[in-house]
Length: 485
Length: 95
Image (cartoon, rainbow over all chains, first blue to last red; front, side, top):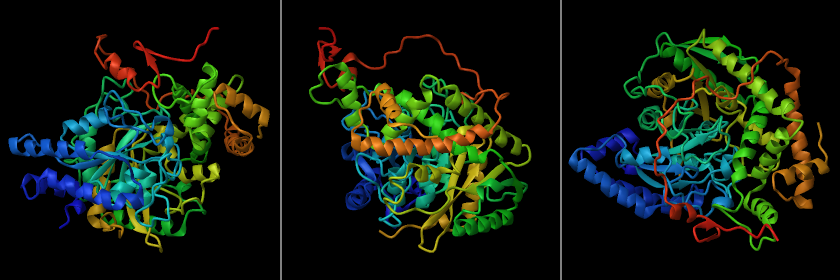
């Protein structure tokens, strides 16, 4: 069997029994990247030397008995996690040559566990986008149909994994950027509770919403990844001080007694017919596993998109003020004076979508508008969060579609920001409420494109998401399907 | 809700962005469309609602106030577009 087709759990068994060395495994992935990446454009930077050196160290750990379940596992990391001395671009011209002087907590933990970082994956510029078309380094293509988008903003992490150019990847999710691309490429994507994983060394987009998470082929692999990544970090004061459960030991095969809420607002008349059908079939699978379905309502659902498009750009305009051409990043040629330096650096260094969001954020925070927009949005955000708190008194999890439809063609929504923003309509609420959410494949449409469903849990109940997803995957074949390449 | 080209130019100046005429017209339209979407929030009575500034209601954790070395001066300056004698260099500000 081709080792690039193994799950993380299977690969660990091969490595432990010396059926393959970490160097052989890494070399197999690097060869696959050489062959497929020119078509998919999932990686911005491939770190061949670093990966082979890490694989060598992994082999040493298997020899001296200090290997962990992630030792020797080849992983792709979204290019917004700072990696010391390895170029970190955030998909932008602004940071095209940025070599971070420090390591993000996420990548430090991966390295300490012995994982092999293959390279940095493509993404929408500064994580602003839902199609991976705003990257300075060109669009990523969906391995299921290379004329379609892979979703965004973690489109490179999704495509790399779906094309088996990594065994697991790291994404980040501010409004759906892990779950939406996972759904559109047939993967399992987990956005943990806000603060469950440290944001230290993650390039900031919207600080009250940003959260890192794993993208994997199975829920079991996601549990292994989360066990390593989760936990309080003194370097991120917003990271949660709570014990990290053993997410692998809490996986189950039956869901007896589990109450799953079906929120009516997530099944509008406009929902794609095949997506609706796949979700109905999924409910039957969950019932057969012992769960019961309960109709519920989250009445403020439709206000999530307008709330998000005030809060996220406001925070982004503030976070992106640091890109001024002085301390790091791009600087324009021959500035006349300091203001010219700032203005031309930013105008030349940022792409159109980033500028649009900085403009929107600056406008809603500007004098005289703060109360009408930002403060209003923060109040509605609380109403949205309360909707969830209310329904969780009667159910354990929620089940929704992840996206309104399957992967759309490249270019289709590129020039219509409102249409693009609406593709995140089912995922954004979860970020606003700070909850954990997981997308997993549950079917395919008539073109063979993957359909995803989303499970949403109360704060810090990731183990409930992973257990339900694992049980579903034990009973269905969808997560085992692979694109032909 | 629609906004004018003059407002967009004013906001661009605040954000230190320069827009050429080709960028300006579509941006006026797109920002108006987005703000139109945002108008829906006015339907809600939020008079008695406390703004939510953080995703979780949790206390801010404390840590000992210790000095910890993070990076050297050389490493921090290595990414700067222009430096001189250990400082960031910018164009002349005062005549």
